Length: 129
Length: 113
Image (cartoon, rainbow over all chains, first blue to last red; front, side, top):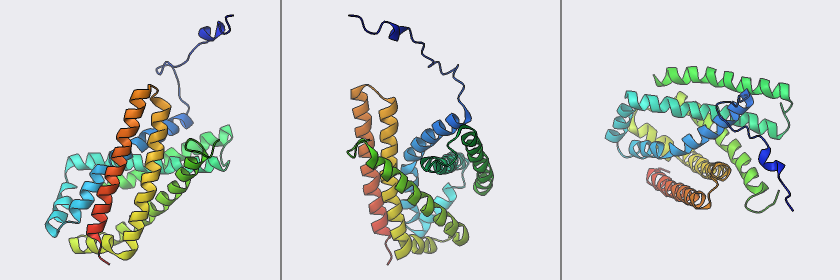
């Protein structure tokens, strides 16, 4: 007996170019992407920490290294990930206790995450540059 | 949800470690901005001192658990072929263990009690 002929005919909306993600979805996927990036950046931070703790000369070398343009670009990307992960993470923790779980308040909270993130990033970029 | 590996326990660990990481990160950043060490000795005193040394090791343990659960969830959600999934999980397990050994080596050498 054929059981699921209609299963194959169900439309699949997985065309990424035609999916319009709501702001809550953007915040969510960016939370995952930023998390992966943060994990991948661990060796860089450990290397800087180890070198900076080796000697006065090495410490000053790290200070000099962090003055370069390549480092600054990387630092901005990683700090952006960190700041996004932080604020979006707080939102998810609040969702766990049913805060801002309704559609309208959820959209508002997601917007608030992006606003808070932008404000903090202004300071971070100013500090790094 | 089950209380075994795939269920609610990692979910709780992820949340508890998230709170720990967020709090320690904020306090450490504030400390760093106020203190802003310019010389090696100040930096070494800060990291190697009893208080921050303990805080940083606590932070690392939370980071290890949080990072591993997060990566594990992402791999299990997006990577479906068994071989590739197993390889990636193994790769990241080795990554997290190596990073932890490295971190503990750094912290042991930095100790300044």
